[in-house]
Length: 289
Length: 321
Ligand SMILES: Nc1ncnc2c1ncn2[C@@H]1O[C@H](COP(=O)(O)OP(=O)(O)OP(=O)(O)O)[C@@H](O)[C@H]1O
Ligand SMILES: [Mg+2]
Image 1 (tube, each protein chain N blue to C red):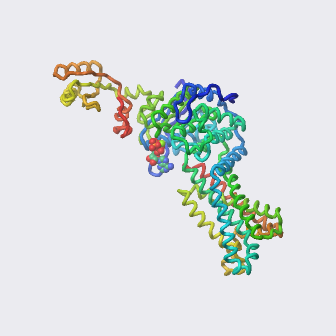
Image 2: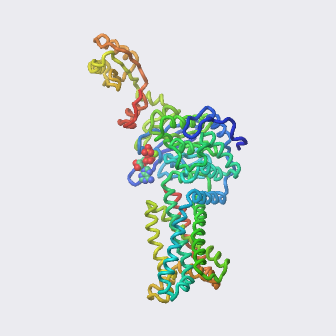
């Protein structure tokens, strides 16, 4: 490796001409570019997660819509429908907050598909795919980096909820547990959208199709209303909808009356999503020209 | 046969729908030099590179890169190559330094090693001042240099360069050429795809000319020029008004069609031998068409390409004799 990178100082930078010093420095760089032992799969994943986080650091505004949407939903629903649906805004907030947390985080999973789709149109993916690293690492790393988004969306939602007067019976452990569980499920679901990201032709197509698939799951769930108030066919769907299961488990954790079975069901569903879509995404990613 | 081959392909084929993008390509690329793959838009250059860099699976034929089969030993191939794609393969949303650091870590350097390596390369490629700028704000030339720097974070045995100077101004193009020469001087083999004949002529030891997915000619630049078999006689007349007359005379004497040059008093014509050329110059003088100067040149690669494919390599490009 290079011991002292600066031997002689080439005078010109940026778009200036390359001097003889540069030539020498390039020769020196070539000589010192010896191959280190191969990076572990773990390191590779960590570095791709780092890449995702560095991108957020450079353009923090990209977290804005992720955080503003839940704020709007929470305030709007609580004050618009609170009285009508639950009798009082306070009672409705108590009912709604865990569901809004789920919704806020699940909406952001569509971005995973959009950003992969954007990446694929750029040359950088060709370089990543020609590197001697564990080949799903760019995908796994990006998925791990996306957890930053989930946590940002979740934190804003919960903090706002607490400010508006949400009573967290489960305390901080309950809140952290709920956020963790939602993030875990989102991690699984995001793989569905990365698969979509590899099948669709443009980021916009990913977004439209993604939200079209996500809307029924979000709105035909127990996030906004008690399923018992619904017509029976709808009630059945809400009952089998994994989003409802996630909301049940999150409510349990945040209220402080969690049921182990609810939590395990969500973990199992996240595992199933991961088991289906990780191989699918990986295969498509490898074969995409 | 005796010198080791960096790349060997036999009947490589890639089909996209109805398009046979690569249609039976045989290549034998010697190690330690620049090998040019020359062809117009859509010839199949990028597709060949993508197969050799293990990004695309061939639909037919086989290839070994540095002795490793590109399908069976894809992982081993990736350990020895680097790719600078046609689309700049840098990550535009992070800085130049972050790009190089990321690759250093992915290739197995420790944190400190990767940082040092990034700085060393930024410095060598004249990018220190731009190190902390997002790559999307780089000029085309800087982006290309970063791209090549990224390809040598670990010095590769074989580097694929896909049209590295397309869209660059002449100065940036020269910088890239200097870098390529430095790489080869250090023992790296370079497979260079290009649409520019002068680029292949300048850098490449051997050149394969491809068109419609097939290799239509192969050899050193001199051999390719010799395949056209003839030299070109360029004549400059004293009086431009006599050009039409001179063209007719040369065509009659040499039995080949003479062409007007871009120079208003210039005429060119293919000749089989220097003797024939001398004879033709004599005839011009005798016919009262005085000559200001003449030269006998090898055909340019442009002319070679035209002769091989029946169409010009690049419609809007210069034709330098
Ligand atoms: N992924 C793809 N799907 C369908 N057709 C493709 C694909 N990639 C390339 N082709 C087609 O294959 C042919 C060869 O393309 P290729 O990109 O290899 O040419 P090229 O020589 O690199 O051209 P250029 O100089 O424009 O880069 C073209 O007709 C192109 O349209
Ligand atoms: Mg190309």
